[in-house]
Length: 523
Figure 1 (cartoon, one colour):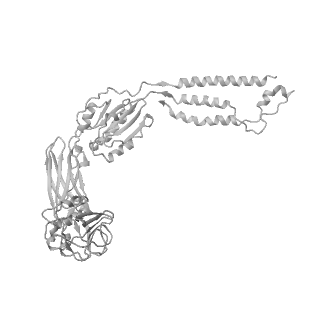
Figure 2: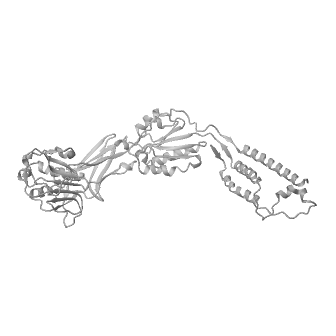
Figure 3: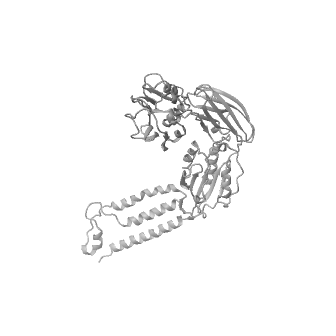
């Protein structure tokens, strides 16, 4: 590739059109009296007879080329045989460690910048180890353009490193690795990869991470929650911290903990009331890796439901005690779940559960079976002797599918769009209402419509303790030998350009002299 020692001289190429203009604009020659015109026919053939503008002298191309060669020579043209560098950058969580004087990833980019400054001309590409396919290409002429984009990678660190396959590493390129050496997977890969240089940064070793925060509905109280918070000490020394639990800016609990090196700690807690915002756990004082000193969990709010029509005593009671439902006061119709009893109409909602009540209910003479589309509902056992069903009314599985049937008679049907379930079972039949399967069926139908209404569901936010290991490990020696980025110092093209310009200049002078002799020689 061609490099320039003084690229500012290349701006001189913009004057080349001026050469053409000077040859294009020529003044008309004055009159010259001669004894006979035919003796000067060669001169007459070159004379212009119109305006001052005429076709440009073809010699302008040769003279523009002479000027261009001299400009390129002054710009210091040099031919170099450069190779490409593939840089594999560890952009995992541990690179966010604060080393005191700078963040670990800032130190890594500074070390990489200094290493590239020492090289002869090159072409390079930086690959992310956490997001395969994310890369930045540049060369020695644009060496300072990659830093901003690569630095932005650390605003959203990936979930973990994914080492490149052998086929992804070009055999004709030089391979570098930039890392802190805190991930054992990176170290094992570096031990066998064809690396020519390993740039390692970082010294901090101690870190306590919040690795899990989980909540579930309480088994002891109607509205309470049970929670668990897990800590992991990934450093070399004992960690003493204060752990605080918040909802918004309100602190709910705090603990003083001591976690041994490499150990874990589990903190259990109970909340008497539902939380009305994200639950946040914080570790104080902050350590070298602030990223894992805080963990947040957005616990879902209870589902807003509303009853439409006369639902009956048994069904209304079962719905009112469902722990995932809340029935807001007022006349508003905009809710998450509309429960319709009878043939009435409901307002706007995300999902609709309709219990039909058309005519008189009848007993079922055949066993009931769940269809393949029932999914989790098929685990609910229903004996046909407990059940009665209403005749099929105006609603049915015309645009959906049956979930429960007794022979050819459908009992529960589902429509996906809109999200709706129609139930023909008599929910006020005493024999069915007394069975433990009664509330289980209702909860299963609601969960199918709104999965977030699942009973006894554990909501958790987790991170791997491996991501929080920050202690640098010894790195192996590069197995590919020293860098060979360039084939040498390159060839200076300036002398050849100057020689070419001189040759063209001599040719141009001879052409001018020959032309003058031809005009001056009478025929």
